[in-house]
Length: 312
Image (cartoon, rainbow, N blue to C red; front, side, top):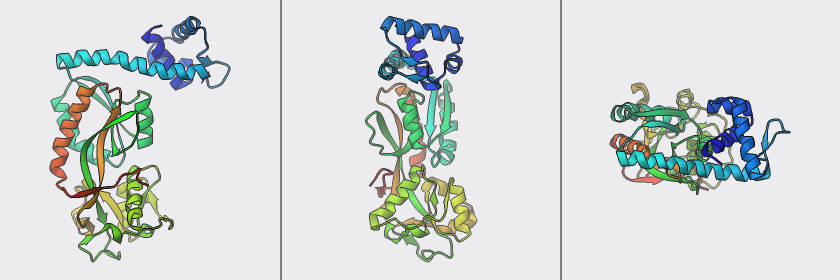
Protein backbone atom coordinates (compact mmCIF):
# COMPACT_ATOMS: atom_id res chain seq x y z
CA UNK A 1 0.00 0.00 0.00
CA UNK A 2 1.38 3.41 -0.98
CA UNK A 3 0.35 7.06 -0.61
CA UNK A 4 0.18 7.25 -4.40
CA UNK A 5 -2.34 4.42 -4.51
CA UNK A 6 -4.46 6.13 -1.85
CA UNK A 7 -4.39 9.38 -3.81
CA UNK A 8 -5.60 7.49 -6.89
CA UNK A 9 -8.44 5.96 -4.85
CA UNK A 10 -9.47 9.41 -3.58
CA UNK A 11 -9.42 10.80 -7.12
CA UNK A 12 -11.70 8.03 -8.45
CA UNK A 13 -14.03 8.40 -5.45
CA UNK A 14 -14.34 12.11 -6.18
CA UNK A 15 -14.76 11.90 -9.96
CA UNK A 16 -16.60 8.55 -10.13
CA UNK A 17 -14.69 7.90 -13.32
CA UNK A 18 -11.26 6.33 -13.90
CA UNK A 19 -10.42 8.43 -16.95
CA UNK A 20 -11.23 11.76 -15.25
CA UNK A 21 -9.37 10.67 -12.13
CA UNK A 22 -6.28 9.84 -14.19
CA UNK A 23 -6.38 13.28 -15.81
CA UNK A 24 -6.55 14.94 -12.39
CA UNK A 25 -3.59 12.85 -11.20
CA UNK A 26 -1.58 13.49 -14.41
CA UNK A 27 -1.14 9.78 -15.18
CA UNK A 28 -2.52 7.47 -17.84
CA UNK A 29 -5.79 5.70 -17.15
CA UNK A 30 -4.19 2.20 -17.39
CA UNK A 31 -1.54 3.20 -14.83
CA UNK A 32 -4.15 4.46 -12.36
CA UNK A 33 -6.41 1.45 -12.87
CA UNK A 34 -3.51 -0.97 -12.44
CA UNK A 35 -2.42 0.62 -9.15
CA UNK A 36 -5.95 0.56 -7.73
CA UNK A 37 -6.41 -3.06 -8.82
CA UNK A 38 -3.10 -3.89 -7.18
CA UNK A 39 -4.30 -2.32 -3.91
CA UNK A 40 -7.62 -4.18 -4.08
CA UNK A 41 -5.76 -7.48 -4.66
CA UNK A 42 -3.48 -6.75 -1.71
CA UNK A 43 -6.44 -6.05 0.59
CA UNK A 44 -8.54 -8.82 -0.97
CA UNK A 45 -11.61 -6.53 -1.31
CA UNK A 46 -13.37 -4.41 -3.93
CA UNK A 47 -13.15 -0.66 -3.27
CA UNK A 48 -15.27 0.29 -6.29
CA UNK A 49 -18.37 -1.24 -7.84
CA UNK A 50 -17.40 -0.99 -11.50
CA UNK A 51 -20.75 -2.34 -12.69
CA UNK A 52 -22.47 0.91 -11.72
CA UNK A 53 -22.51 4.00 -13.95
CA UNK A 54 -21.12 6.23 -12.63
CA UNK A 55 -18.75 4.11 -10.56
CA UNK A 56 -19.74 3.81 -6.90
CA UNK A 57 -17.87 2.94 -3.73
CA UNK A 58 -18.65 -0.38 -2.10
CA UNK A 59 -19.60 -0.37 1.59
CA UNK A 60 -16.05 -1.22 2.64
CA UNK A 61 -14.78 1.17 -0.02
CA UNK A 62 -16.46 4.11 1.74
CA UNK A 63 -14.66 3.22 4.96
CA UNK A 64 -11.35 2.92 3.13
CA UNK A 65 -11.80 6.32 1.46
CA UNK A 66 -12.47 7.99 4.82
CA UNK A 67 -9.33 6.46 6.27
CA UNK A 68 -7.34 7.24 3.12
CA UNK A 69 -8.13 10.96 3.53
CA UNK A 70 -6.73 10.85 7.06
CA UNK A 71 -3.57 9.04 5.94
CA UNK A 72 -2.94 11.41 3.02
CA UNK A 73 -3.48 14.43 5.29
CA UNK A 74 -1.05 13.07 7.84
CA UNK A 75 1.54 12.37 5.15
CA UNK A 76 1.28 15.98 4.00
CA UNK A 77 1.97 17.10 7.57
CA UNK A 78 5.59 16.00 7.10
CA UNK A 79 6.08 18.70 4.48
CA UNK A 80 4.45 21.17 6.86
CA UNK A 81 6.88 20.26 9.61
CA UNK A 82 9.84 20.77 7.28
CA UNK A 83 8.48 24.11 6.00
CA UNK A 84 7.88 25.38 9.52
CA UNK A 85 11.36 24.32 10.62
CA UNK A 86 12.88 26.23 7.72
CA UNK A 87 10.56 29.21 8.21
CA UNK A 88 9.25 28.74 4.67
CA UNK A 89 5.85 30.21 3.80
CA UNK A 90 4.98 29.23 0.26
CA UNK A 91 3.38 26.75 -2.10
CA UNK A 92 -0.18 26.38 -3.35
CA UNK A 93 -2.95 27.39 -0.96
CA UNK A 94 -6.64 26.89 -1.79
CA UNK A 95 -8.90 29.46 -0.13
CA UNK A 96 -12.69 29.66 -0.24
CA UNK A 97 -14.61 32.87 0.53
CA UNK A 98 -18.38 33.31 0.89
CA UNK A 99 -20.10 35.69 -1.61
CA UNK A 100 -21.05 38.36 0.95
CA UNK A 101 -17.42 38.70 2.06
CA UNK A 102 -15.45 38.20 -1.19
CA UNK A 103 -16.10 41.52 -3.05
CA UNK A 104 -15.26 43.78 -0.10
CA UNK A 105 -12.61 41.85 1.82
CA UNK A 106 -10.49 40.45 -1.02
CA UNK A 107 -9.40 43.84 -2.45
CA UNK A 108 -8.47 44.98 1.05
CA UNK A 109 -5.90 42.28 1.81
CA UNK A 110 -4.88 40.49 -1.41
CA UNK A 111 -2.23 42.95 -2.64
CA UNK A 112 -0.66 43.26 0.81
CA UNK A 113 -0.56 39.47 1.25
CA UNK A 114 1.00 38.82 -2.16
CA UNK A 115 3.64 41.47 -1.53
CA UNK A 116 4.59 40.06 1.88
CA UNK A 117 4.37 36.37 0.91
CA UNK A 118 5.30 36.17 -2.80
CA UNK A 119 6.04 32.43 -2.63
CA UNK A 120 2.43 31.56 -1.75
CA UNK A 121 0.28 30.72 -4.77
CA UNK A 122 -3.28 31.54 -3.72
CA UNK A 123 -6.15 29.79 -5.52
CA UNK A 124 -9.32 31.60 -4.43
CA UNK A 125 -12.91 30.47 -5.03
CA UNK A 126 -16.22 32.13 -4.18
CA UNK A 127 -18.39 29.44 -2.56
CA UNK A 128 -21.35 29.10 -0.22
CA UNK A 129 -20.75 27.99 3.36
CA UNK A 130 -22.16 24.51 2.69
CA UNK A 131 -19.87 24.07 -0.34
CA UNK A 132 -16.91 25.25 1.72
CA UNK A 133 -17.54 22.80 4.55
CA UNK A 134 -17.80 19.92 2.07
CA UNK A 135 -14.58 20.89 0.27
CA UNK A 136 -12.61 21.36 3.47
CA UNK A 137 -13.70 17.94 4.73
CA UNK A 138 -12.89 16.39 1.34
CA UNK A 139 -9.43 17.97 1.31
CA UNK A 140 -10.14 20.27 -1.66
CA UNK A 141 -9.74 23.52 0.31
CA UNK A 142 -6.98 24.43 2.74
CA UNK A 143 -9.00 27.15 4.48
CA UNK A 144 -11.93 29.52 3.99
CA UNK A 145 -13.34 32.80 5.19
CA UNK A 146 -16.95 32.52 6.37
CA UNK A 147 -19.47 33.78 8.92
CA UNK A 148 -19.20 31.81 12.15
CA UNK A 149 -19.74 30.03 14.50
CA UNK A 150 -20.37 26.85 12.48
CA UNK A 151 -20.40 24.33 15.33
CA UNK A 152 -18.77 21.67 13.14
CA UNK A 153 -16.57 19.16 14.97
CA UNK A 154 -14.23 18.58 12.02
CA UNK A 155 -13.48 22.29 11.49
CA UNK A 156 -11.55 24.83 13.55
CA UNK A 157 -12.25 28.56 13.55
CA UNK A 158 -10.13 31.67 14.15
CA UNK A 159 -12.01 34.98 14.39
CA UNK A 160 -10.76 37.67 12.01
CA UNK A 161 -13.18 40.51 12.83
CA UNK A 162 -16.73 41.42 13.79
CA UNK A 163 -18.72 43.15 11.07
CA UNK A 164 -21.80 45.18 12.10
CA UNK A 165 -25.06 45.19 10.15
CA UNK A 166 -26.14 48.54 8.70
CA UNK A 167 -29.66 49.42 7.59
CA UNK A 168 -30.17 50.67 4.03
CA UNK A 169 -33.45 52.56 4.21
CA UNK A 170 -34.94 54.42 1.18
CA UNK A 171 -36.51 57.86 1.70
CA UNK A 172 -40.08 56.55 1.35
CA UNK A 173 -39.66 53.88 4.05
CA UNK A 174 -41.35 54.03 7.47
CA UNK A 175 -37.92 54.12 9.21
CA UNK A 176 -36.36 56.83 7.06
CA UNK A 177 -36.91 59.59 9.66
CA UNK A 178 -35.02 57.71 12.37
CA UNK A 179 -31.34 58.65 12.73
CA UNK A 180 -30.56 55.28 14.33
CA UNK A 181 -32.56 52.10 14.24
CA UNK A 182 -33.00 49.15 16.57
CA UNK A 183 -33.43 45.48 15.80
CA UNK A 184 -36.94 45.76 17.27
CA UNK A 185 -37.81 48.19 14.42
CA UNK A 186 -37.30 45.54 11.77
CA UNK A 187 -40.21 43.91 9.99
CA UNK A 188 -39.35 40.86 7.92
CA UNK A 189 -42.28 41.60 5.57
CA UNK A 190 -40.66 44.77 4.18
CA UNK A 191 -37.09 43.44 4.19
CA UNK A 192 -35.28 42.68 0.94
CA UNK A 193 -33.28 39.47 1.41
CA UNK A 194 -30.57 37.52 -0.31
CA UNK A 195 -31.59 34.23 -1.90
CA UNK A 196 -31.67 31.06 0.17
CA UNK A 197 -28.18 29.59 0.69
CA UNK A 198 -26.50 32.81 1.84
CA UNK A 199 -25.49 32.79 5.50
CA UNK A 200 -25.94 36.60 5.67
CA UNK A 201 -29.61 36.06 4.80
CA UNK A 202 -29.87 33.58 7.68
CA UNK A 203 -28.28 36.10 10.02
CA UNK A 204 -30.83 38.78 9.02
CA UNK A 205 -33.74 36.38 9.56
CA UNK A 206 -32.34 35.34 12.94
CA UNK A 207 -31.94 39.00 13.91
CA UNK A 208 -35.63 39.52 13.20
CA UNK A 209 -36.51 36.34 15.09
CA UNK A 210 -34.90 37.68 18.25
CA UNK A 211 -37.51 40.43 18.46
CA UNK A 212 -40.49 38.96 16.60
CA UNK A 213 -42.63 35.92 17.36
CA UNK A 214 -42.93 34.95 13.71
CA UNK A 215 -41.15 35.34 10.39
CA UNK A 216 -43.88 33.68 8.38
CA UNK A 217 -44.68 36.74 6.25
CA UNK A 218 -44.15 36.55 2.48
CA UNK A 219 -40.65 37.22 1.13
CA UNK A 220 -41.73 39.09 -1.96
CA UNK A 221 -38.27 39.99 -3.28
CA UNK A 222 -35.02 38.07 -3.01
CA UNK A 223 -31.75 38.49 -4.88
CA UNK A 224 -28.41 36.78 -5.35
CA UNK A 225 -26.35 39.93 -4.74
CA UNK A 226 -26.19 42.75 -2.21
CA UNK A 227 -25.74 45.29 -5.02
CA UNK A 228 -29.10 44.25 -6.49
CA UNK A 229 -30.76 44.61 -3.09
CA UNK A 230 -29.51 48.21 -2.91
CA UNK A 231 -30.93 48.95 -6.37
CA UNK A 232 -34.28 47.40 -5.47
CA UNK A 233 -34.35 49.43 -2.27
CA UNK A 234 -33.65 52.60 -4.27
CA UNK A 235 -36.77 51.79 -6.28
CA UNK A 236 -38.79 51.97 -3.07
CA UNK A 237 -39.41 48.23 -2.82
CA UNK A 238 -38.27 47.89 0.79
CA UNK A 239 -35.27 48.24 3.07
CA UNK A 240 -32.33 45.88 3.40
CA UNK A 241 -29.38 45.24 5.70
CA UNK A 242 -25.77 45.50 4.55
CA UNK A 243 -22.54 44.17 6.01
CA UNK A 244 -20.53 47.19 7.22
CA UNK A 245 -17.67 46.76 4.71
CA UNK A 246 -20.16 47.03 1.83
CA UNK A 247 -21.14 50.50 3.05
CA UNK A 248 -17.60 51.78 2.41
CA UNK A 249 -18.27 51.55 -1.34
CA UNK A 250 -21.73 53.14 -1.28
CA UNK A 251 -22.14 56.11 -3.63
CA UNK A 252 -22.17 59.57 -2.04
CA UNK A 253 -25.74 60.07 -3.28
CA UNK A 254 -26.83 56.90 -1.43
CA UNK A 255 -25.09 57.47 1.92
CA UNK A 256 -28.13 59.32 3.31
CA UNK A 257 -29.95 55.95 3.16
CA UNK A 258 -27.51 54.33 5.60
CA UNK A 259 -28.96 53.98 9.11
CA UNK A 260 -26.72 52.60 11.85
CA UNK A 261 -28.05 50.59 14.77
CA UNK A 262 -28.20 51.68 18.37
CA UNK A 263 -25.51 49.93 20.39
CA UNK A 264 -24.91 47.14 20.82
CA UNK A 265 -24.97 46.95 17.04
CA UNK A 266 -25.98 43.56 15.61
CA UNK A 267 -22.96 42.05 13.85
CA UNK A 268 -21.65 38.91 12.26
CA UNK A 269 -18.48 37.09 13.24
CA UNK A 270 -16.14 36.53 10.29
CA UNK A 271 -13.47 33.85 10.70
CA UNK A 272 -10.87 31.89 8.84
CA UNK A 273 -11.72 28.19 9.13
CA UNK A 274 -9.71 25.05 8.39
CA UNK A 275 -9.74 21.29 8.97
CA UNK A 276 -8.90 19.98 12.43
CA UNK A 277 -5.85 18.24 10.92
CA UNK A 278 -4.27 21.76 10.91
CA UNK A 279 -2.30 21.48 7.68
CA UNK A 280 -0.48 24.55 6.26
CA UNK A 281 -0.89 26.45 9.53
CA UNK A 282 1.97 28.81 8.71
CA UNK A 283 -0.04 30.19 5.76
CA UNK A 284 -3.30 30.27 7.72
CA UNK A 285 -1.60 32.30 10.46
CA UNK A 286 -0.08 34.64 7.86
CA UNK A 287 -3.54 35.26 6.36
CA UNK A 288 -5.02 35.83 9.79
CA UNK A 289 -2.37 38.41 10.70
CA UNK A 290 -2.70 40.34 7.42
CA UNK A 291 -6.51 40.38 7.34
CA UNK A 292 -7.04 41.15 11.01
CA UNK A 293 -4.56 44.00 10.92
CA UNK A 294 -6.14 45.62 7.87
CA UNK A 295 -9.83 45.12 8.61
CA UNK A 296 -9.92 45.91 12.31
CA UNK A 297 -8.72 49.39 11.45
CA UNK A 298 -11.64 49.82 9.04
CA UNK A 299 -14.29 48.33 11.35
CA UNK A 300 -14.09 50.62 14.38
CA UNK A 301 -17.22 49.33 16.15
CA UNK A 302 -16.54 47.92 19.60
CA UNK A 303 -19.95 47.34 21.21
CA UNK A 304 -21.58 44.66 19.06
CA UNK A 305 -24.05 41.79 19.48
CA UNK A 306 -23.08 38.74 17.45
CA UNK A 307 -25.91 37.27 15.38
CA UNK A 308 -25.06 33.72 14.35
CA UNK A 309 -26.21 32.34 10.97
CA UNK A 310 -26.98 29.10 12.85
CA UNK A 311 -28.98 30.69 15.65
CA UNK A 312 -32.41 29.11 16.12
